[in-house]
Amino acid sequence: MEAKLKNESVNRVILEAEHIDFSYDNGYKVFENINLEADTGKFIAIIGPSGIGKSTLLRILGGFLKPDSGKIKLMGKQLYEPTPEVALIHQSIVTFPWMTAEENVMLSMKTKDMSHDEMAEKAKVSLSRVGLEGFEDLYPKEMSGGMRQRVAIARAFAADPHVFLMDEPFAHLDELTAEGLRQDIYNILFSGETPLKSVIMVSHNLTEVLELADEIYILNNMPASIIGRVAVTMQRPRNPRSDEFNSNLDMLYGYLTPPRNKR
Amino acid sequence: MDVIDPNARIADLIGLLYVLSNVFDGKTDLYRLEKEMEVDIDDLMPIVYTASNLGLVNAESGDISIAEKGIEYIKSGMFQRKNIIKNSLTKIEPFNTAISMNSFSIDDLLDELKENGVQTFNNPDGSHDLEIILIEWGMYSKLLKKTDDGFEVIS
Image 1 (cartoon, each protein chain N blue to C red):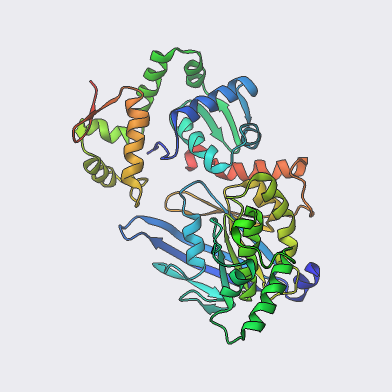
Image 2: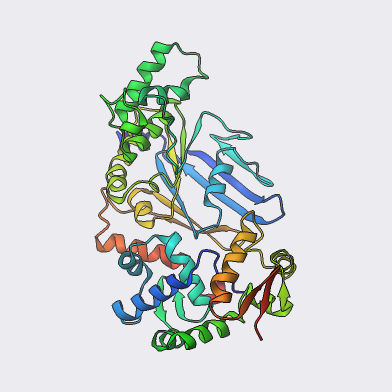
């Protein structure tokens, strides 16, 4: 299914950033000339040192922050504000404690012209997609952190977005849970059963980035700019203990520690 | 101008130098260090950049090695360690600017750093980050002491 999705529209750009500059209100320039493309069927990761502005860039890509100059385009059309076609998944797991898993997922459909039964049915399908079939009536306090993050992903799926923006989605999970979820996530995202076309994730965990990404953008310097764009060609599933994996890790750290005369 | 990373701490520096020296015989790849210390880049890189800026390690192209000054630090007692850090801090920000002001409030130092083109603290958390760095590095090394309305360089 994944291969079919990729073959149908190879290299079609879904979300792109063109010459993005951005400054805080106090004049501090965060980004300079950021260019980024997310193609159909691609899992894109953005990495960089702490405080470089990775989450801020994600918010710009989603239309939640307006750049000083440059354009964000969604399927060729300029994006001026947030849209249901681009879903943002936060690092803190956002589920509402007084709602069941199903009700949490239904939230993302409230603005659509759908009956309660239609929303409930779609929520069930969405929960099933992320492996939570049979857990629809559980409240967040009855779920593990991994299950709650799956609910958050199911809720994002239910809005039928074309792009997922994931901000450190595994940061608040213990390593075992995160590893299990990572193993599932790529296939869930690109199952081909939803309109989802591309994913952009920011992360400070290079192992997780190399497990998931097709392409990695490296942010560095001040103001931040893209200093590297790397295609990850390792076969899936990827083994973090393999020599090839370690060689890729080594290469990414190379980007983060440029020679002193280039810093 | 090199700057102390706002997330770098003395304890992390000591841990980095010990692991580099004792586990890796002074030199390794950063990804191996990450795995040994069980950290991610948000934890590792602030102290790597800072140790590099202080001249205690050499970090380049994904490799890291302990520098002569780093070896001296590991072998020294508490008093000498503080002296090594104190002497190294004078060459990097925000301490270079702080020394030129001698006595200052956080806000005055922030303005002066901005004037000197140091942008690291020009953000919503900048004032808090700067104060933590002055206390963590400046007071530890006995380069600075606290006053009623700010800090003063110890002569």
